Image (cartoon, rainbow, N blue to C red; front, side, top):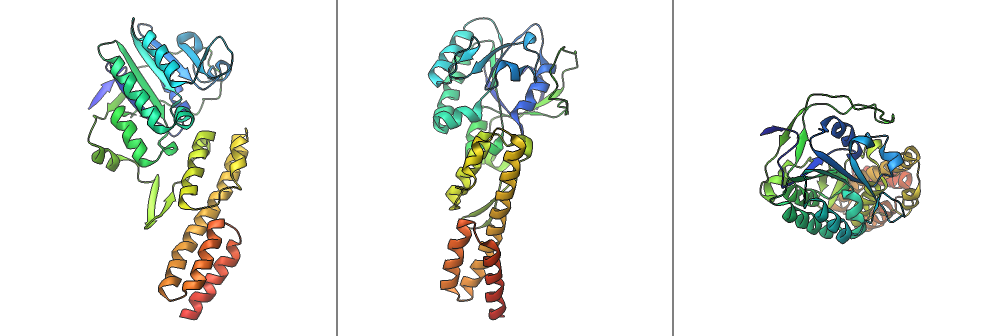
Length: 311
């Protein structure tokens, strides 16, 4: 069903975005002087001010650093802070740190944290909103998040490309309509997840969707590395890229590496053909080489040669 912002109080909601930071532009337009908006973000205030007018919100920076706006990232401390906040008044809490907290504390701890806050929100006039990128999580994890935080889908295109310019004023706009997707069973939720996140091409082998440049945060890149590791690929070449600050450079390195993975995936499909044709020993050796993601030109040539012999 459809509803206007803000959503009902006493609940937790999720908003799925390619880049959760884009949600700030939309949130700025949703701000109503009659209701408090509290933003908890991994962005330092100087960076956060490029996305939203800080004068129109209350905010804290989730960090271990010493700062007057700092909020320690320990889940128990965030929980205590939120419990103190929701004990009076009313408002919306925008928690832009889902991927970070999952990486820092583990996904299960994050879910338990969300469940705890959801219990505390009952009979209050506060709403917790969790913007996050589904690309940062496994499909089963996305399903669990959606079960605890029913998804709000923004159906009016209010997010513009003018997001890198510091905001100096707030313009009043009409509230766009958003869709509330009611909580369903886990099986139903998993069926709704974008199947472009992971496409199974062979039993046990998965082609992962390409991550857009604007979405390639360190947390999302780390998740992708973990996914490739579980598939058996050697990702040591790409691991240092997580420390690169420049997103453009980070994306170019990621893109080049992903091309190797895609080539290796295609090689794997053809190696399976070789196994069926009786080239068992050669197939085993070739499979080992593609998992190292080295010498792919030679591997492809060898596969072509063996398939030609079989014909």
